[in-house]
Each structure stands twice: as C-alpha cells, then as structure tokens.
Image (tube, rainbow, N blue to C red; front, side, top):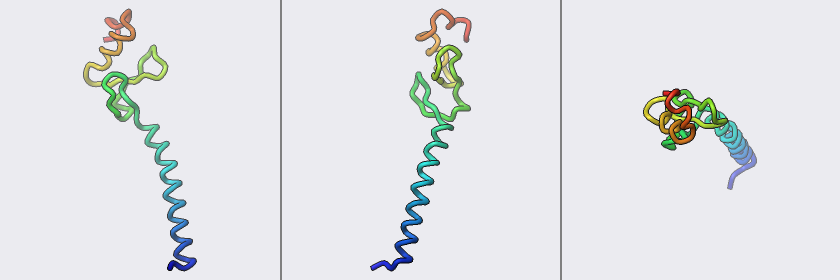
Length: 81
C-alpha cells in the first residue's frame, strides 16, 4: 500500500505531465502545417502560404505549388511559377 507522501508525489507528477501535454500540443501545432496537395505534415518554414487562399499551404520544394495554382487558380497559374 502507498502512503500519503507517495500518493501526493504521484498526483503531482500526473498534474505536471497533463499540463505539459496540454501546452506541448499547442506549441507543436503552431510549428507544423499540412501541404494541401501532397498531404505531408511539415514545418511551416518548409511550406509556402497561398496568396489568394486564406489558409492553404503547399511545399516550397517540388511541384505542389504548381499543382495548387493549376487546379485552384488557373487564371494566375502561369504568372505564379
């Protein structure tokens, strides 16, 4: 059987881990985003935000930018490459 001190330590440990999970989740969410074309989760600094869409990101490297503009903004696709 656990005594009172051990139970208090376990409760405190549980509270600390709960708080850490809550804050860490938000911090990680601020650092990551999903490419709208390929669906890869990447750091935001490896993605580009679309000028015309409110909350759309696509990969800096590769053809995701071209695919997005060709599918969603065909009138400006040629000028944005």
